[in-house]
Length: 262
Image (cartoon, rainbow, N blue to C red; front, side):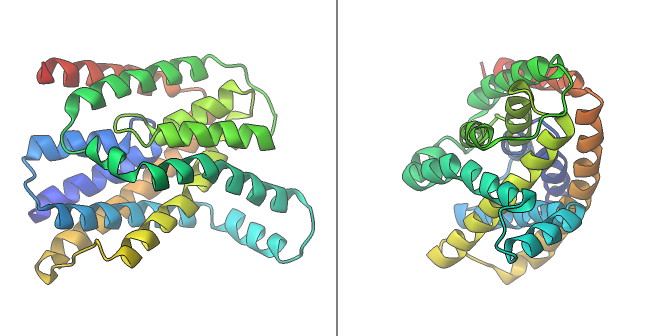
């Protein structure tokens, strides 16, 4: 993978991780269009590096929230911050369950499966249309809400289903405040990303080739910068009920992907 391709895929990952248009789906489309012929080991470490970059950008954007929660955690009090952490933990259960038990089946769905990506992008579009029409409230994410949102996150492991789109839409459709829904959606994925990275590192599945250092670095920087921009932008867009435009986009790209495949 050359430097240009790495930067382009990094930008795609950084933008689509937060914007509700499916990062996995766009990466699959991007790799197919670029004719990516990386061996599985190189492709895996590149994907891990990009996900680490976007997770790091999330930590930067929400650094105050994260520090506040960590401080509250060690106070051993059942306060609002501690409850939020418990909700995050509850939301991780469905995706963790699916990821552990069906990892091989999920991986088999990737690899230029553009038809599936197209169909799932249309599903994402429908979710966004419904969420955009939801009433504005000031309700906080509850414990049961966290579990339901977690199920959406597990379903979003399919290529083409936007994780942020699915979780934010589910939260909003449950009657939660849109800004709080976006904040919860972005924070709930951090433990899962770092957990997946740790699992891949421990398993020894990652194969690093020093010749790829330049490409990996370029992809990391591109994904990190794009992630900072997209995360900030998405919070504003959700708050102002602008999800329908992403729904139009997902619908168009999904239809085009299906047509090209057929």
